[in-house]
Image (cartoon, rainbow over all chains, first blue to last red; front, side):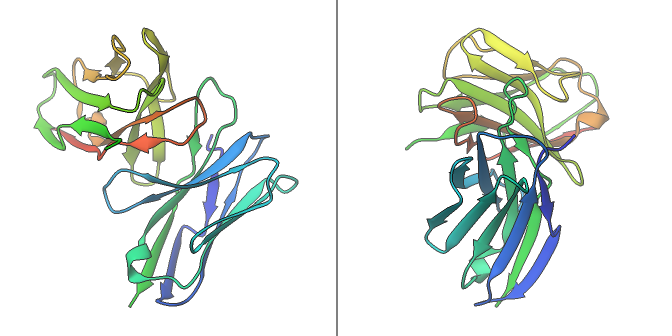
Length: 111
Length: 112
């Protein structure tokens, strides 16, 4: 079963607005990562947050992690049309080497 | 430039004709992995390798083979492709298990 589940599955916003995507997972983790995928292309790593961290920033990205609720959120501030992509969370629960990906949130930013 | 190189980008083949998708990384990563991506099913791991000569099955290994004879290369082999293996395939590598993954550009495979 999928470890990470993103919510919403799809999100459409206007340029300049903030976009928030959520990820829930089922078991204990060492870290949680967020990736971005432009249509049909390889995933690109955005940010990694460790289980002992609560918040992390990278440019316009802010990631939070709540291990008590087994959830994470990715906030993109002041979104741009170029942010249009699918966003995936991935967790590293020990399952024999698997980094388990959620099914992603498809973000559309309209100019 | 640090990268994962995957070839070919597009491949159309017929049922039963053996094919190999190559994957090479130039970052001296120990961990390498293959995924397939299908609509509605997300990314599913096919095989992974912790180091040279060490490979193991992921979630969907049936119909696939891999080898890791050199640290940089991790080819994916379909001995007898079938239409249900039509998918978008990604190779990825990381310095260690659970670390930041670097992805190749993907191989869109169609099996007729």
